[in-house]
Amino acid sequence: MATDVHRPVTGTPHRADTASQDTAGTTDTAGSTPTASAPTVVRVDGLTRAFDGRPVIDRLQLDIRAGEFVALLGRSGCGKSTLLRILAGLDRDIEGTALVPRRKAVAFQAPRLMPWKRVWRNVLLGLPGKPERAVAERALEEVGLSHRSHAWPKTLSGGEAQRASLARALVREPDLLLLDEPFGALDALTRVKAQRLVDELWQRRGCAVLLVTHDVEEAVLLADRVLVMDDGVIAHEQRVDLPRPRDIADPRFAALRTGLLERLGVEAPSAAPAAPSKAA
Amino acid sequence: MSISHAPPQPASDISGKERPSAPGPAPGEQPELVALVPSSSRRARVPRWLRRTTGPLLLLGLWQLLSATGVLTSDVLASPETIARVAGDLVEDGSLTSAMGVSLQRVAIGLLLGTLVGTGLALVSGLFRIGEDLVDASVQMLRTVPFVGLIPLFIIWFGIGEAPKVAIITLGVSFPLYLNVYAGIRGVDSQLIEAGESLGLSRWGLVRHVILPGALPGAMTGLRYSLGIAWLALVFAEQINADAGIGFLMVQARDFLRTDVIVVCLIVYAFLGLLADFVVRTLERLLLQWRPTFTGR
Ligand SMILES: Nc1ncnc2c1ncn2[C@@H]1O[C@H](COP(=O)(O)OP(=O)(O)OP(=O)(O)O)[C@@H](O)[C@H]1O
Ligand SMILES: [Mg+2]
Image (tube, rainbow over all chains, first blue to last red; front, side):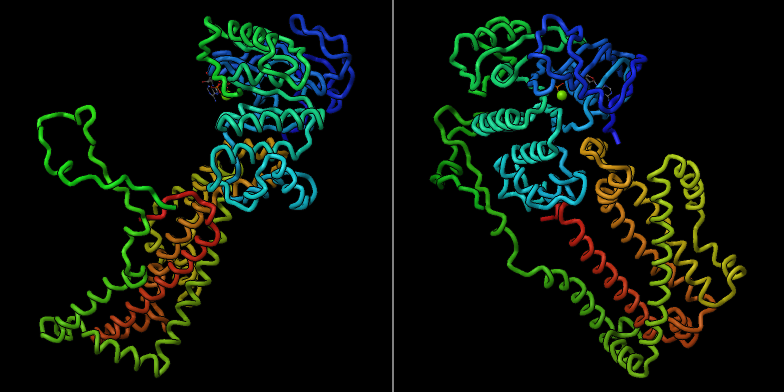
């Protein structure tokens, strides 16, 4: 369940494989120049989600191409998690069109591990067939958690739980990886490691990533495209064309960061209270 | 793991405060430090089982004392000594053991049936909206009828054999299990269900891997209540038209004014109840070890 492409409200024909069709030449959101003509994995058009009559997402438009790394910024409560849940197929009280791939994985803002399953069983939960424990061990190894594979989730630290949740998402080999502030509970060092990890995995697996974050630096460090959400729509979009691996000391990096911070309403770029620059 | 202590400070710092009127420590003055005692040293040296048996033993001693001094006469309550002797006799002639066997069998069958009915109904109304509409209202209504009050009706329906006794126990056991399993299912964190959905679990997969394990703590609570009620129902059921079992032994003893036999039977009930509790505790320890809950100091 919940793995189908969403039913578009508009009458466009849709099937599960719509996402893999090459839909180049779409009228993209403001000024986006998508990388070559990669197929679209996410197509959202006129998406609206209201809670008790108050629209949190209001005719939002968003396209993500296969293999693209997109970061989503926005102040707390602007609807980032709501958008992510819709893309994950968990919230269907929506209006508008939303097409997503069948294979997608989510790492939620809270780890949401099943407390009654040991870590490695949590990682394997929901995988088709009867996967071996070694599969879980490999995924846990990738996030540096192999030594905790047999532990109960209640004994994990906050950061460990978040990494376990990340491993659980990665082991699914998705076409679309949805990450909701996955590095929120990590200390500065582990955070840098985890960022590198996601970067590596993304480059290796070539899946599209939508990363929700509060950290502008993190967004510029990892993403091809940074979106700023406000008032229920993508209010701003910034391509990041810096070569990888990226250097925070690069003046172009600083310029991008300053621009985005201004977009987020942070006036003085040196004191950036809205975006804790832990990534350094 | 140990908690590091603050270095001991001169005693005069604590006791001999120069300015007691000062609201807080003046800048530079050493604030009062509290030692954080490691929990291992705070725990009493006496082992747990010994601590737990001391209370009952003291009570027993008091009882023997009152009997020996004649405050408690034997037609009110026999002394522990007499009771022990009578219990020995009853075990020897086999009447107690056979009665226990009969009673245990009744409870076991009633418990089994009640568990099946209670959890079955709870699953139906917990997992399906339509099941809830059909089952829950009826169960909530029937629940308010004291099940003991149904004994006369059951005797008319099932006669005076084993059936009405087992039926009473079944009925008594079903309700607490139903209520707790149902509450357990409905209390499963919706965020976890959502996570399960996002992991691609099927409907049955969700039930098996998320909902049922999540409802297990509730089911265990229900089982505990059920066991308590099972013994209660047994006592009621066996005192009416029984020709075997502990309750029958008690009714007989009452007719002969044998308080000693009655007390032996009560002790047997208590013992069986403790045994059942022990079984549930063990089950909980095995099945709920994942639970991050407070386990007492
Ligand atoms: N189930 C719900 N019922 C009512 N309102 C909701 C519900 N879920 C979310 N909201 C509201 O929708 C808005 C967006 O919530 P959302 O969780 O998407 O914010 P967010 O951008 O992820 O914030 P944060 O950065 O703090 O995680 C908030 O104002 C929230 O109160
Ligand atoms: Mg959020």
